Image 1 (cartoon, rainbow, N blue to C red):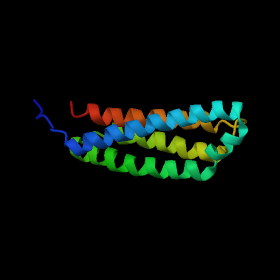
Image 2: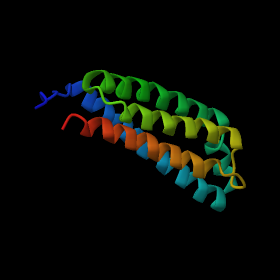
Image 3: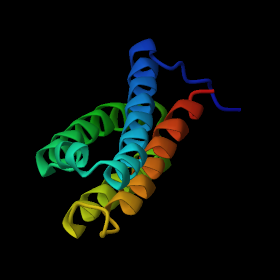
Image 4: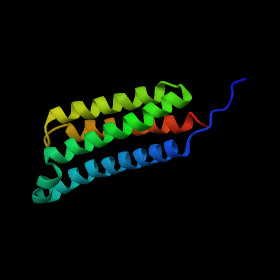
Length: 127
């Protein structure tokens, strides 16, 4: 029988925050697609590459902190592997170009979903 691993409270909060940020990213991508279709002037600000680059850096930092520390605590490699795959898809999406005529938003959404799933696996590993 395996001993139960107690999940540190700060790690749980970090994963919750990272999942919340993933959700915000998802809302951003969907909202941007709709807003670009309705009003291109608003889309110019939301589609600025710096907005996405900063968001990716924040995602990488939270992913490394929460998923890395979680793997260290519970020893499971699937959560950081899934999160890394999601981050890789998000990085690849940034090379596709921004705007309504590119698949960048679709691939970013896929990457964000994979990253959020990795954080969810990280939380479940302590249950």
